[in-house]
Length: 400
Image (cartoon, rainbow, N blue to C red; front, top):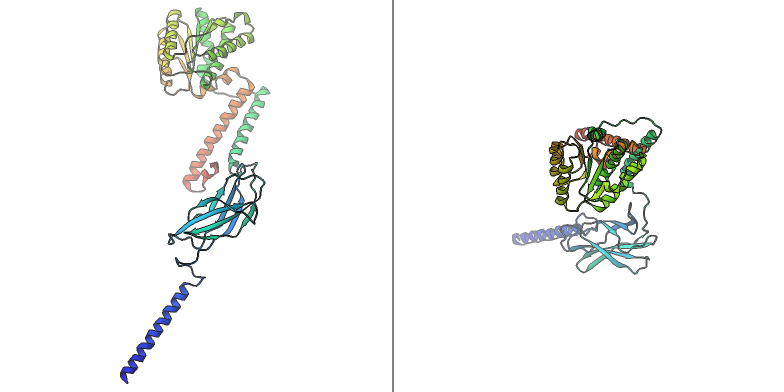
């Protein structure tokens, strides 16, 4: 009797354990459970939305969806999503792209036409198994006239343009516009006057580069003012160049200057002449001119390279007053060391406006300077605000 009782108790315990284990398995496979077993059926992505891509030039749509419940790191067999597209909800749908697992966005810009309706399906893939989503759409691509991610750029352009227009009108009405003194430009009259008193030539060298260099253009602008002064004083001007296009531009500039001052008969095409395109051949020819003719004033205004020190040192050795100007950083030290006056960087580029005092150029220069001052002020404010952690000030200047 004791043995039978023990067998009955043991059998009851085995049955109870089996029942508990069965309930545990059923609970793990319940559809509402948080973790789906690896071998569960493949589920499609949900909440598929297709919209026109914002801030673009058209022919693009952006798709977003909620990840498939089967898209989990533990499921190494999950292959990602396939993007299907059609022009009708009935199809036919064609594949236009793929995305890897755990990606919930896709930009479709493949052969789309603005104003056309498109429908999409996002298909989850695991091996040969496919689980398509519900059809999303219609979505219609279109170009946007206004890029909302570049409002900060628009504001900056409007502010700078407004400042420039205001100061141009300010100058046109004859109101004074303050510009700081630039010694090298104020010395132009002094240099020309000295050459006139000594009865010697004025040598103007516009650099070694062609008209595609902005520094050459700045040098030609200064040549115009120098030519007006020489025409007024009756001084001899000589402009040897190393580029044929520069020769043509320089001749026209000098001719106009002589006409503007009422001395057209004093102009001669031989004032401006071509030497050679070769860099050091040009420098050697200029050295010879300096040594033979000993000009009283030399203007080195333009784009210079290794010939800068050769020319400036020769001019210094003959005792000429030299006014140099360039934006080439590697050559500025040589000019500073050997010339009487040197226009550095922006001083060189604003010389045309400074010398001509023309209202449009003066107003533009003043507006740009004030715009730079505003930018510097914003930088200082930004440093304080960003350092103190008050606000992400840098985000205001991000251009998308």
